[in-house]
Picture 1: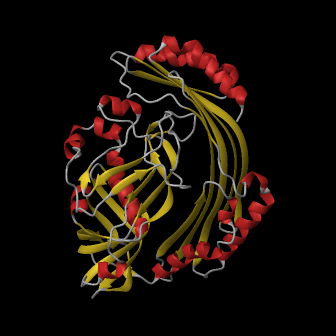
Picture 2: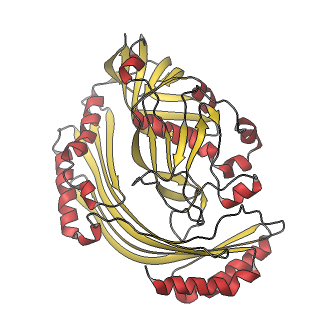
Picture 3: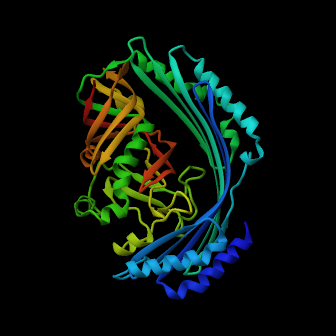
Length: 459
C-alpha cells in the first residue's frame, strides 16, 4: 500500500466534501502482461504499468464523473466533478446509508505472475498452442492467450471511508476452429482463472486439448430437428442462462427504470419450483466476482435472488437502494477506477438441488442435452442461446451428437418450466459486459437443470 496516495486522497476529500452532497475518489495502480497466439503466429506481447482514477460527485441527485491519469491534477478534476454535478442536479440526493469503513485488503499470493518472466510465459502458451494445432488436421486455427493483472485500488469518500484493495487476475483462454470435409465449421473453447496463483496455467495440457476435442466431436453431429423438447442444461450452460437471462433483470437500475419489470419482478412473487434457489455471492473464495468491498465501499454479500422458488431480493448500488427504499447489496462495480460504478453481478448461480444426472434423464423418451454456450442474446425477458454442443436423449440415455442447438423462450416461463435441479453445481469464470464496461470479472454457476417445453431450433 502506498500511504502517500492514501494521504493525498484523504486531504483532497477533506478540502471539498462540504461543497457537495456526496464525493468519492478511486485511484488504481496496476501492472499487467498479456500474450496471445493466433494460429501458428505470435500475435502480441504486451506489458503495462498504469495509474488512473476518477472522481464522482453528486449534488441534488445529479451525478458527475471525471477521470484523471495523475495525482498532480487531482484537485482540479475534483473541482470539475463538483461544478458539473451542480449543473445537472435538480432534485434530491437519495443514497442508502452505509458504514464508514477503513480497511486494507491484501491478496494471498501463491506464485506471483510478476515474478515469472515474459520468456517463460511465452514458452508456456506456445506449448499449449502447439498442442491444439497438432491435435487433428481438421483444426484450422487457434486463439490462445494469457493475461495477468495486479492492481491496487484506493477508495475514499466524503463519509470517511478509506479502503485499499489489492486484486490479482490470472487468465488463460484457449480456442480452436475446426472445419469438416463438408465445409462445416465448429468451435471449441476452454478457459482457466485464478485470483492468487500463476500456477493455474501450469500442467493443464488435458484441459487445453479438451477445447479441440469438443470442436472435432461436433464435426460429425447432424443438425437437430427443430421443435419443443424436454431439455437438460449442463452446469456451464445453466450458469450462463441464469446470469444472462435472469441475473441482468435483477440489477436494480434496470428494474427502477422499467415499469413493466417492476410489475414482473415484485418481491415475494413465486417464480419456480420450491427447489429453485438463485444466489449472487461476492463472498465465495477466489472466484472472479469475489470482492470484500464493492466500488462504493459497501461490503460484498451473499444474496438470495430467488429463495425456495420465490423472488426475494435484487442487486443494488447505494443510489438504487435509496430510490427503491431497499438495502445496498455491494453490487456497485466498475471495470477500472477510470469508470463509474454501476449495478453489476458478482458470482451468480443456481444452487444445487437433490437430483442426480442419471435420475434427471431416466424417464426422458426424446429430449436434448445442451452443453456449454457458443453465443446468445437477451432482450428484456426473452432470450436465445446457442449451445456449443448438443446430444439427443433417447429412452433415458445420452445418444447421438446433434448440432445447431439453439434454445429460446421467455425467462419467466422457462423458470416455471424447470422440473428438476441437479446436485452438482459447478462455477466457471466469465467476463460480463454492460454500459460500455467489459469484460468485468464474474463467475457463473449451476448444476444440471431439466426444463420442459423448451423451443429448440435446428438448421
